[in-house]
Amino acid sequence: MDEKLKKLETLTPLDRIRVAIAQMHNFLVAPPTIPEIRDRMGVWPAKTIIALLAMVKKDVEKMAEKCNWNESAGGEYWQTDCGKQVVITDGTPAENGMRYCYHCGKQLDGKRYAEENANGN
Ligand SMILES: [Zn+2]
Image (cartoon, rainbow, N blue to C red; front, side, top):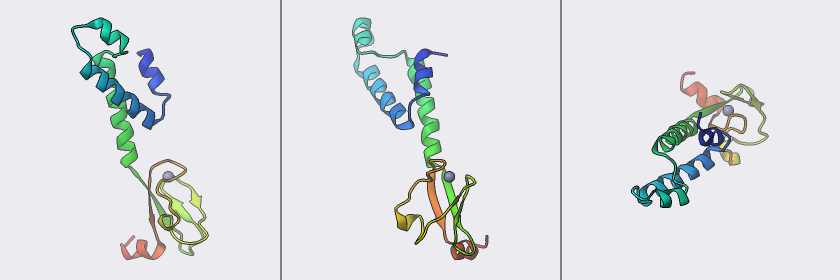
């Protein structure tokens, strides 16, 4: 595998997006007919940028996934989709400003026990 791509895998999704935007920008603005300028600007080959965009696409799809947190019957804890039990002393995850599951990193969707039963679950 390309050394650049190996290094990209060690970055956070946000940093991969930053690199992708910078590379696409440089690729589009650097004159394709003047290789010296492209080299000086660090313009990557198109196939490397395409591979980077595939990584970013996967990152974005993962960010759109949700981790459901369902309140237990007695309200003692919240059961997460990713297999953890979380204790919140007062209110829902949203009421406590929690937007992402801190175990798996997905968007968090908290459902109260009563809400869950009203939906027929
Ligand atoms: Zn989770």
